[in-house]
Image 1 (cartoon, rainbow, N blue to C red):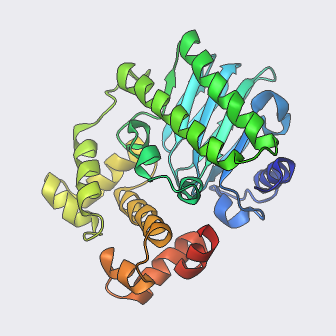
Image 2: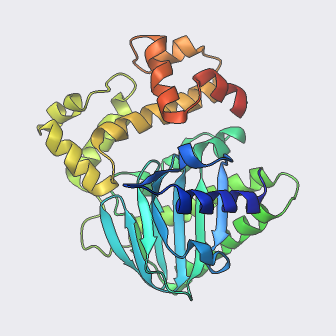
Length: 302
């Protein structure tokens, strides 16, 4: 892993130098690529306000003490003591008006971290918190906060240290964190007053999981759900911050990464496996998102 200080300085530079609106694409602006990053809010006062940005990484934040405002996709919510929230891949997020007494943790991690350790992607991604129909934030109890803070603290110590097999332990602890968060979101109501799941969005999620490898068009899913494609795009965006089309594309991208890393299928075979009309179409899709070719990605993660 790249030195923690280097990554944090790179992140700060991206936030302060590249914001021209409407958001910063970290995948394009960061000079040092990373699969994992964690920092303590009280130790990094330079991140007291974070410009709108998105990345291919997932993000989890826990505020133990302090106040402020946050945005995940189209959802705006107040930050207070014991606020927990998560940001799916490629969803825009930001924070503002954070108090100087803020304490807690900010965690970024990528799918590559699990692939490099040989873990099946389902261990992390089959959690309820990564479903588009789940509200992205929740206020937790003191007991829940202490339980989560212990895991965050362990992750932070591993990140800044140089112990043997640190990446393996980090991947395991993230899975532990996600499982515990999954339990919290399943058994505690969202503070928005809305149901954790929206029926149409949930059905869309299930259909995408079953069909994304062959059906890439929003119209296909809209027809099955008896709604207009524009309505479906707007509804999914309301809950996730990204449209139905982007949700489908993210599923294709995650699966393509898994196939490139964990199978011996050629790029041509993967292209047809994922429903592309030609290998060149898959190459354009992958390169446009990751800024590297499928073959280069395979070489890097293996």
